[in-house]
Image (tube, rainbow, N blue to C red; front, side, top):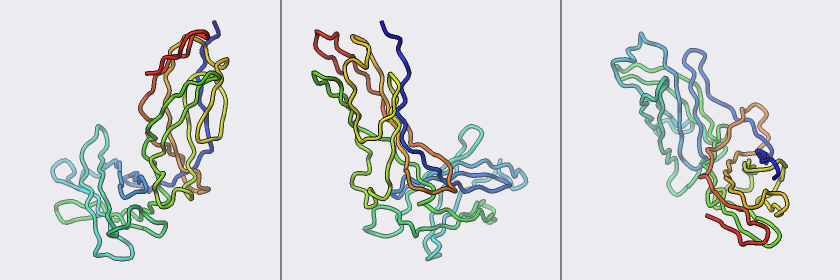
Length: 229
């Protein structure tokens, strides 16, 4: 039998910028629909962090009357929150002009300015879905959905993918075909995929989406029929 190798088909990688403070660093990303998620490390004990509630306040830069409250909750050694920023009625996603001022607020009426958050520079896509395996007499065809097919900026996002299963090779396409001879026959395999934006933002850090749900399939025994589940 041939040895089983780990396969990661890797597409182009983008760098995504993060909002950071030298004193209390925090990270915020958006799915580039209208959701924003943040993780924050709070070390300023003198602010009463152990005794009072605190949250992140997002203020729309072009209209200071538009504000959002992201209530921070403890997550192990850090704090996190997620909120929906419904900036404009009828608009289903952020635009490249959107920008927010961010403040850390306490219920003793104090707040700290943490700079700006620009959604287009901090994109973490949602996990791909509908990962499927189709058997043909020649091999196996893998397809999936990005979750952004109906996004108004789908073409501009230029989404790239990383597909992980068995064997080693790099393929730049929206689907993958593997011949029968490339996979060990009569063997169970596991497959998952994740994505990221490929826009050329040199000043950004790399950030992949979460992994998709794991898909398992079994290669045929050359003369037998396929088993997919």
